Image (cartoon, rainbow, N blue to C red):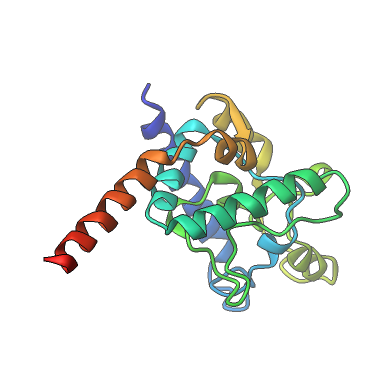
Length: 189
């Protein structure tokens, strides 16, 4: 079966579970500008090749300087991963706590706060504290192990740092350089 179809089906199933959990809870913390999960990653995000493709395409639209900064931040996080209690996602727009690749975000980001795997640190501490205080007792959390099983059918997963390290965006840089040369020629004319 086509892995892109399977990924889209998984995205739809996650979105449906998220909608059930959020329900009519207007005070649910996950939303634009929260960023809590992005600031408390248990480890470097892992992606399958089919998840990496749309993310890579989105990153290709960024300026070379911005892509270089993301690569630098990701490499630094990969070096510190075993020492840091929590990692900040290198893609997070820290000033606004927003995700510039929200539509292309991997499954790990889509499930955080709604699916739980406590032994791996995959849960939202803000939500967990509310649940511990007696709130949201009726929430039926998604099963992260089931998600992991479905992801395994999409192929091998690698860390974001590995995908970025192996990505040859010279074709993107070459096209940008060519556009720059054309603009200079037009300016000279």
